[in-house]
Amino acid sequence: IPNVALKQAIMATPGVFLETYNSCLLEGTFPTLWKRQRLVLLPKGKKPRDEPSSYRPLCMLDTAGKVLERIIHNRIEAALEPHLADSQYGFRKGRSTLDAIEQVVSTAKQAVSGKRWKGGSIKYCLVATLDIKNAFNSANWGVIMEALSTLEVPLYLRKIVASYFSDRVLTYTTQTGREEYKVTG
Image (cartoon, rainbow, N blue to C red):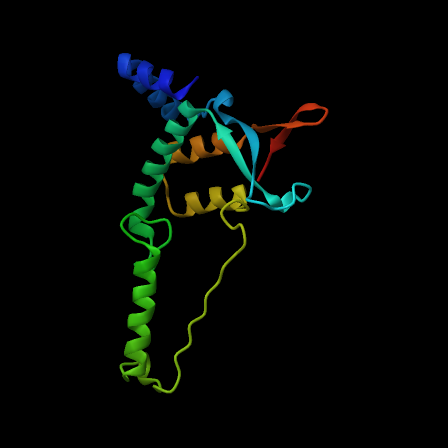
């Protein structure tokens, strides 16, 4: 469904869409049709066309499914907020990379000025960072489900996330035609 048509349909019959999304949440079912994604490869600048790293993969998803994803996201975010450490900046509303950097700089300034935790020396200040390549896209789905359970995310949300993870299909076009790949995590 084109985005313009979907928007008009929602505006014309909001009750139908509200009922559909509420039904998905109550039943813990993410519709199979909304779990299909089409891979599009976008060239990166003037890089050689024969190298895989010269392309940025983009998965095109059904817009109605993206609306349900956003509803689920907002509810999980609200359920998790009380469990997150104050020092966590990533994936949080109202926090940014700049806030994290400001906190690091402030801590370093305090360390150098002698205001140290447990009375440590002011000689050294160490900052260690960790960047896991492609961490978001390579997170194990079983580990995600376990974390949601450990953090006591409501059962209805865990059920719909489990449904979201199941039976996902990626379609893409090759020189010989259209192919499908079952997505797992």
